[in-house]
Amino acid sequence: MDSFIKELTTEQQNENTRDIDLKSTIEILTLINQEDRKVPDVIAAIIPIIAESADAIVASFQAGGRLFYFGAGTSGRLGILDASECPPTYGTDPEMVQGIIAGGNEAVYRAIEGAEDSKELGMRDVDSHHVHANDVVIGIAASGRTPYVLGAMERAKQLGATVIGISNNADTPMKPLAKYMIEAVVGPETVLGSTRMKSGTAQKLILNMLTTTSMIRIGKVYDNLMVDLNPSNYKLISRAKRLIQMATGAEDETVEHAYEQANGHVKLAIVMIVANVNATEASQLLEQAKGYVREAVKLWRAEDDKHSHSK
Image (cartoon, rainbow, N blue to C red):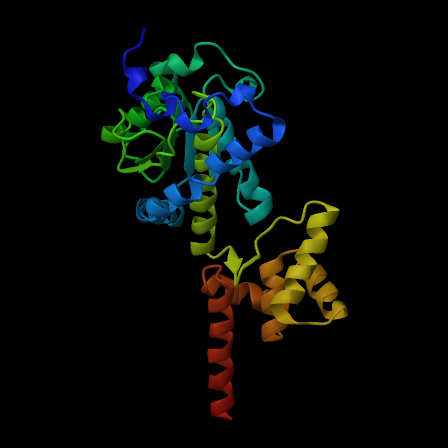
């Protein structure tokens, strides 16, 4: 028997949920909910290290780097989920944020036996994605000791990438490999070892925080509006037009016209309406402002003031 597993917080028996098998449905659900409610408080206490990690991701993106998640099982699936949401939400290139799971795509749907136990496989997957020094690699493992994830982190560190670890235990083998170590120790699970529960919830919240903060910081949000979304279906086209209207207060006809002229680019349409310029001029303003809508509008106002004073 593996003696180390006995020491893991995630492998302890939860005294609050003993005899859960004797409870009614309402009682079981209440116990699960009581345990789940502990997760946000744990995360609140580690916001400073999450912030440092987010700043490292921002620096990577600004240098043309990418963000990779490496995980196995639930952790790997959560990384893939977060990565897959970035292109439709923020209009990112699919290469910019990528989720890699031990065992490949098939492992998203069913367990691939032994894949997570191979450190060499983790190292190979880092190499096959051509990870380099401008990239950020995040290893995710509830236990903090999954060989596949450790291998990926070790190889990424050798290549000069910024390495971040996310675990639900403290002082794990991930720690020496990570520049930033996020330890969300949420305590024993409702059902012993079922880390898809509190541990998975904590991981999901942290990944949301990292990518959302990073996307805000690189200009993909104006006010609290997702102004770089990809309007790829009817719902998102409607949302895009509503975002333009909310950002500008313009009438429907003006919004429709700007949306068409901007080829569905929300940022461009907003600048066109606010600055009362055509698509080409709005594009130039956004380029000067490095994609930040507020900065583009500020540049236009400064230019407008200059012209007003020169008359």
